[in-house]
Amino acid sequence: MERKLPSKFGTYFEPFLGGGAVMFHMLSKNPNLKCHVSDLNSDLILAYIAIRDKVDELIESLENHSKKYQKNSNHYFYDIRESEPTSQIEKVSRFIFLNKTCFNGLYRVNSKGKFNVPLGRYTNPNIVNKENLLAVSKILQSADIEFFCRDFEAILHDSKKGDFIYFDPPYQPVSKTANFTSYTHRDFTENDLERLADVANQLDSKGCYVMLSNSNSKTVKKSFSSGWEIKEIIANRAINSNSQKRTGHKEIIIKNY
Ligand SMILES: C[S@@+](CC[C@H](N)C(=O)[O-])C[C@H]1O[C@@H](n2cnc3c(N)ncnc32)[C@H](O)[C@@H]1O
Image (cartoon, rainbow, N blue to C red):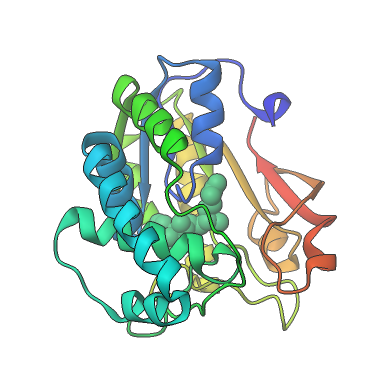
């Protein structure tokens, strides 16, 4: 990853934030980096904000989930999956609890936006990773990060020449069975991919550094066929129902620098 980043740039933008692996990597190298990050998943953005501002309350609520889960995991998991809490802390602890106990830590919702992943097979899931939550909270408090819940296209208004934008969108399927694009209630369609290519081209014209990752799909390569450098890489995927298929996938990195 390090070799693929531009050597010097202004603000860092990550408009498909997810777990923020690249943002945390960048902050570990440069804690003063100015970050402008967003995602369409409102529960996810709420989780970052709660971890930053109310980590002790969040840990307490997760400890409560953990105790009840240990008494009757099956019953408690589906009870919480059905629940619709309204307070920020309860919403976020439900989100983290489901992530830690559902099948493979997958996040998927149905057409109504309801989380629908079944219970995972864990003997002792780490529902309250206190050390990690406290460490992440500290990083989020000290860093210069602005969080937004919004569609990726909105970054066109905030970015300027010399900024670096990294796009890690839901990947395009490469086969009929590899169609996992439902992170939010809206699927990431070919139309979204076309919008993304258009946004990337506008950022390029503005003088931004742009990098994207995606599956090794013909549709993606076609969308970025003119003026973009496309490199194939071998990546390890954590999510696949068949554990033997979790390694050695070909992905692509697309750059304009
Ligand atoms: C492949 S994941 C990102 C993975 C992330 N880089 C990581 O390290 O975990 C894609 C993310 O895009 C978000 N997303 C889907 N459609 C979006 C849209 N139209 N605008 C912004 N974010 C979107 C999903 O909620 C999900 O968090």
